[in-house]
Every structure is written in structure tokens, then in C-alpha cells.
Image (cartoon, rainbow, N blue to C red; front, side):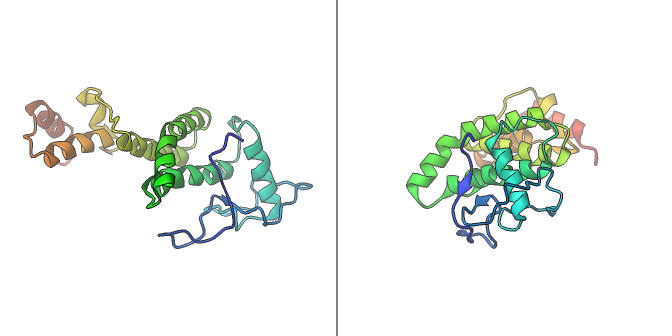
Length: 193
């Protein structure tokens, strides 16, 4: 695999209420002779520590491959995503300076991987939504928020886009006036007026 996975004993992490679902516990049983490639017996919120030995085999074999088949199990995509998400949300804010520094260096790699996965699995609305939000967070953390025209940032899926919220937030933080063009675009796009 290309890395970007967590290996270790499953345990509750700092600030977490349950075992991180992405941690691959090498002590957990794996049935390579009968892998469940389709994740048939896996629940809605997959966790490596909770899936069957057959499902673990299916997931590990999926990880070892190119992960580029549009018909890949959404379960495996999300299990992998949970590790990427943890790297961005937990590790990039770690109290341990070396973990935090390395996680922040990994942000562009994670973003590229998310974009690659979205290009392959773009028919899965739930994955698109979660991955898009994580990409937007990475952009915010890297301070590379889009400067696209107002028409493109106002509404996205029925709500104000991250870019619009960030632009408004930056203005408010810096106690700056709302530019007339932004205010007018905001009012014109507001469905509640």
C-alpha cells in the first residue's frame, strides 16, 4: 500500500470515546483463505476491530491493491478514509510536536489521495460529501482557500459554501466592512428573504 494507514493495537485514543476504526491490529485474526471482498457482513459504521476475520482479509487485500476499481466496496473506502480523516483532524493538532509536524506535512498527500479516490468513486454521495468536507478543511489548514468568483462560492448543495463562510469569517475577524459586491451577491442568493 502507499502508506496512510494506522497499524497497532486497537485502543481508545486521546479525546476519543471508542477505538479508532481505522487502526489495523496485527494481533486480530485474519482469514486469508476466505476473504470477504464485498464486506457483506460489515455494519454501517465499519471498524477494523469489529469486522470478521474474513472481512479483515478482504480489507487488507483491498489495501494491498491499487484501490482504483469503481466497484470497490464502499465499506473499504470508508474504513481507509477514517484513517486519512484521523491524520487530518487528530494528528495535525496533536500535542506531540513531531506527530503534529509530520501530519501537517502529509496534508497535500492526503488531499491528492482524496481527490484520486473521488475521481474513481464519484457516484457515492456519502463519500463525496465527507471527502469534500475533509478536502475543504485541508485547504483551510493550508490557507489555500479558493478565490473563485462570487457566483461559484455562494451556494453549494443548498447552503453557503466553505469559501463563502471563510470569506465572511475573515472579514469579521479583521473587523472589515462587507464589500458591496459580496453583500449584494449574498442577498441575491438568500432563499429566505
